[in-house]
Amino acid sequence: MPTLPRRENGQLSGRTIAILMETDYVEPEIAYYERRFAEEGATIEYLTRLWGQESITFTGHEYQVPMTVSGDLEAVDDARLKSYDAIIVPSGMVSDRLRYSEDVTTNAPAVRLLERAFATPGVLKGIICHGMWLVAPIPEVVAGRRVTCHNNLIGDVRNMGAVYTDQDVVVDGDLVTGRSADAAHLFARTLIDLIAARTPVGSMRSRQRMLRGIGMAPSPRHAAEDRV
Image (cartoon, rainbow, N blue to C red):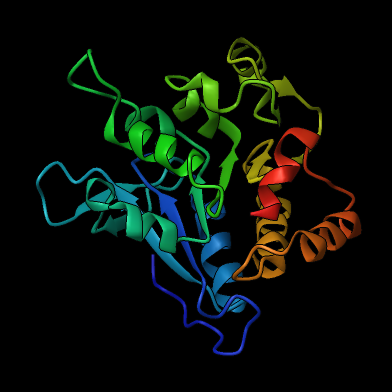
């Protein structure tokens, strides 16, 4: 999949969005992110588990479109993680493949990275459709939080302790969830608005104004994080 030129003066210029990748990704969804985030000036970093290789070429779920990824999610240290404005777990079988661990006594590297991201409020977590599979080994990170997901996963997220919400996109503090790849445009729009509203010091006032404008607000449990 070709990388599109970024808009130099976009509202997300200088911002970086990480997207986890594996085989059986949804091609139209990823193509949409490529276009929309580039239009806003953001840089995209694709991350995967490289298994000791320099890069891996994955294929899409429907059209078998090849996509080569060289970003190593196991090499993401804390400083690099904090440099991301958002990390996205996309649709398709990406999350199911990434949650595989050859060692049954420990979580997969992608799960551990996501757990660290949840411990970093400055990084927005965007999880859409079957992406919630990657959360299954760490249910405590979504317990009590409002989420949406693919209809097939409603029982799963409830078993995680999350509060299923019947909407295309749900915002709960630093967590943005989407129902399915069909809602990728709404999901991306919400992430763009949230990233653009954030200031280097995390202004709660500007963010609350933006959230009211799109008809969403963080839960009281997480609103205090914005004061940091």
